[in-house]
Length: 503
Image 1 (tube, rainbow, N blue to C red):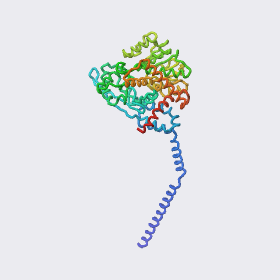
Image 2: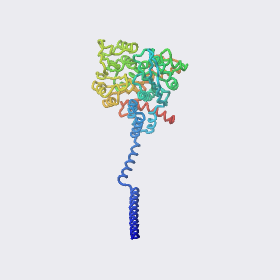
Image 3: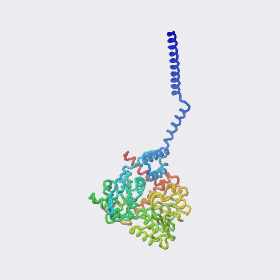
Image 4: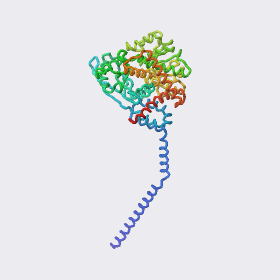
């Protein structure tokens, strides 16, 4: 009986084992066959992947990937992102024709060197302070790094990178051998005494001097850095290095500076505007012009507008703007220059002058005008401001500040056929004369005021012609000077980078 039970038990186990073996064998065979023969779902995936790969060859998609990568590597740098996106959008027609430039553009987005350092200094009361200093040496393909220093509490790495990136293309447009760079500090010179500003400038230069030189990197002034600050910076550079050389531009006339340098950005803006108007059968004489800002650029912009018969109506600062019904006179301009350059005062102090209407906390873009010249700071004209300009009869905008119109405002200009002179072209007069100052320093000689002004006028005319030609070749229409400026500036630098290899 036990033997029979054992026999049947073994038989049952054998049957189960054979059944299990057959089941798993069949399952394995089905899975193998399934892997060999693609299902409808897997076939669809393969087709999608193939189509995606084909689509990625498109210039626009490649450019989008470059921008995406840039944003991932540099998060929270909004101003830099804005500058890059504005340029990339206008360069797309070039990339579609010649895709070799895409990889060069990607390289151009990465600075050759970005420096950040601490700046310790002491105020008159003996209190110690720490600020941050920056210098971004962006691109040296066509010459030594060239770009200003900005002292303002808003300065950060994003601001300096956006300015340095713009400077690459701006310097290229001047036709002079200058690369792009920018620097500065979050130090605020407002309300500081001369001694405190001198203390800060000396501390700033005690680190910066290691990275600059007449054939390497030549800084200049910008917001918050005028002739006084350049003097203190240059004095410290000489003391540390024992060298008297053209390492800074915007210097005093008696120690290596150039005539017309303080006026250059404002004058150059009006020269560019005049060329743009003439090319479109318009004239500057008798036109009503809104000007923002009241610093160096705005002051000399207004002066040149008066020289050419225009009617400047407004100027502004961070507290508000002034409006003069009959136009700002030379006498009033001189009073404003004294207020800003000597007394370091605010435009609000002019509110009691009878012919002046002061608007507290506002910007001037709601006034009726023919032309608008933003000369204050970045993103000072938004969509609403641009719509107000269109509504009030504005037919031309030229930028004296760096990137003063945000992307929405630029779109409004384009849709309404407003003549638009972008900053990298229209405000290149300052760096152009800085380049001329470098040439004079190298030659150990000085040109007359007339010689420098004539060279400046020719440079601004050449810049306009280059932007117009590039707009006709690659832009959506002949007056797309934004695309023209970006493309003309980019091609010169990109070709130089290709010629010099991957560096």
